[in-house]
Amino acid sequence: MTTISSESSAAHLLAIPGMMRVPSPRIEMFVLRGFLGPEECANLIARIERDRRPSTIADANGDNYFRTSETCDLPMQEPDIVDLDERLSVLSGIERQFGEPIQGQRYEPGQEFKAHTDYFDPHGVDYQRYCNIAGQRSWTFMVYLNDVEAGGATRFKVIDKIIQPERGKLVCWNNRRLDGSVNPATLHHAMKVRKGLKYVITKWYRERPWL
Image (tube, rainbow, N blue to C red; front, side, top):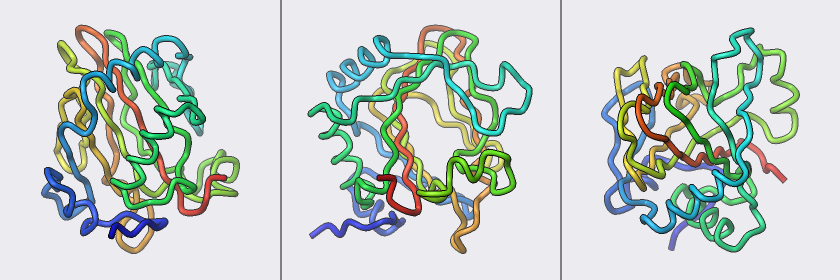
């Protein structure tokens, strides 16, 4: 029987058929192809197109071109999104109550999200605002919703790993080291789309319940 908790683990993830671990001693990171099917991806893309808005960042750095994508907050009360959230919970081994609402992101040609981490800087001005109740972001689960004509890869510079967008492919990583401290090796860059559009969904989990 699958055990659900507040944490994921390498052992839990590698027990899932098809799950592959990225070979690096500096990061717990995994890839699973075909997590979502073509129809599911198409439906999520339609939602993102309908409800997208400009993306924002925590700890504004004065660079107005740091994150140029658009974001969509998925309706967590809708049955298909509830089903997706439950599937991510089973996959991750983390109870739904520890998860933020699922977000969608859309990138046009030339848009990007420069090198950043998903965890909140413990010394940043917005840390208390975002982490006072639910704590730090623990795990990230991201799914590409389409094949991109050119560009749009995700580059993890510290570990020298580039992941190409592929419809239905899930990528996940632990934003912390084994001792619980934040892991700078998770620094990643959503590289510019050169041709076509790029769509992803992202699920972040927290150290404490979100709700």
